[in-house]
Amino acid sequence: MNQSAETSVQVSPTLRLGSMFAPFRRGRADPTLVISETEVWRSAVTPAGPSSQQITFAAVTGDRKGQDHAAEPEPRTLVARSYGPGAQWLTDRFADLIGKPNPVQLLPTGDVSGAQQLTARFLAQHYSVASQSWQVPKSHGVWEATVAAILEQRVTGKEAKRSWRTLATDYGHPAPGPVPDGLAVIPEPDRLRQVPSWGWRRMGVDQARSKTLMRVCQVAHMLARLPELDFDTARQRFTSIPGLSDWSYAEMAQRALGDQDAVSVGDYHLSKVVVHSLTGERNGTDAEMLHLMAPYGGQRFLLQRVIESAGSKPERRGPKMTVEPHIYGP
Image 1 (tube, rainbow, N blue to C red):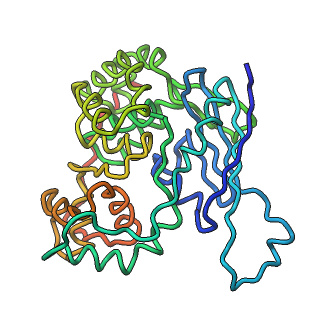
Image 2 (cartoon, helix red, strand yellow):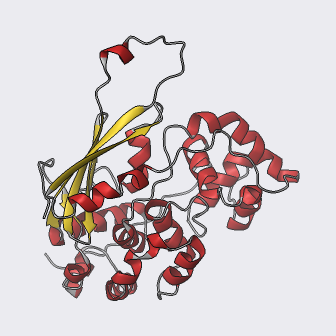
Image 3 (cartoon, one colour):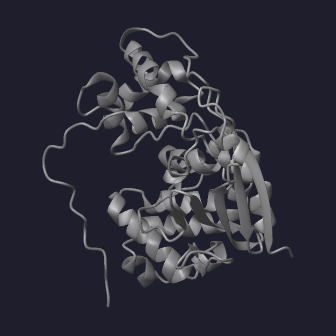
């Protein structure tokens, strides 16, 4: 079986690797993803086995270095080198991972009235800047995105990042290839089933989430087929699994399926950020957020990313949430 493969795609000259892969990163110490100014290293669970991928921009030729700065910038070439038993699988899906260019303008697909005018004005001011450094990815990595979404349910970001990091380093695989030190692959379904109950407790994962993880292990074959389905069917099948909500679907689909309309309804922070960015009001609700986004049906995740990139957070009032002590044993 081929253990390495390479491919390339042309992308917008304004695309930035950091912005493109930020949604995949679970904290600065994420052992499954390394992002620098010049390259990205990521690990992946593939049908063929644990694999890794290096993503860099091709060197700019001498002719292009000397081009007229007033001219329209030319597309750049993004190169992927994949390693391990799933190298060809990753290579075949690299164009999907990078995604399609975002529309030049984000236009409403429905009537805009009342408070929704604020959304249109925000986009007129921020969209062209905020949208050109990233594109909506379709990584096909449903397994990784689902596991991460489950670990992030009902806990602080700090707790979820710690659980993800421990799961990858203590129970996963070293990533194959000439990878940076410490790059790891999270455990595949069969390996995840072997994590003992005390292992989940030491990771700070409660029984409800560990049970959900065991359920998705049993239907991993179904999850692997979700990228082949339309979004409505994928959502229905995904959320039919006990413990997986519309929020969990959105967090997975934004990364693995390329769903441009998957809004993270039920997120602790998102509605507050969206409503504050568009109206200046504090303590926004999901209902208010969805009302402001309504004219952009089919593109609401694009809108969410623009607001997260260019918007503002309401001023913090009161103490931070307490992180519960979940660690047991030595």
